[in-house]
Length: 74
Image 1 (tube, one colour):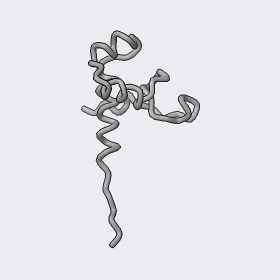
Image 2 (cartoon, helix red, strand yellow; image 1 turned 60 degrees about the vertical axis):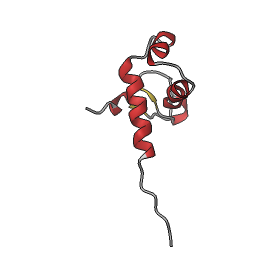
Image 3 (cartoon, one colour; image 1 turned 90 degrees about the vertical axis):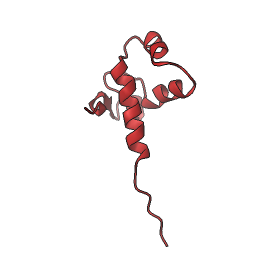
C-alpha cells in the first residue's frame, strides 16, 4: 500500500517543497538524514512528531521522483 498520502505540497508550508503532512519536515531533510547514516530509530528519537511510516513515505516519494522517463532527442 502506498504511503504517498503522508507527503504534502503546500505553497504555505516550507515554500511548497514536499513535506511530511502536518509538519514542516521536508522530504529532503529526512532523505539527507538517512544519507548521512542516521537510522530510522535515530530519526524517530530526534523528531518525535514523525512515525516510521513518514520515513518510509519519504523514501517512496524519492523513488517515484527518480523513476521518470528520459527523452533523448536524436
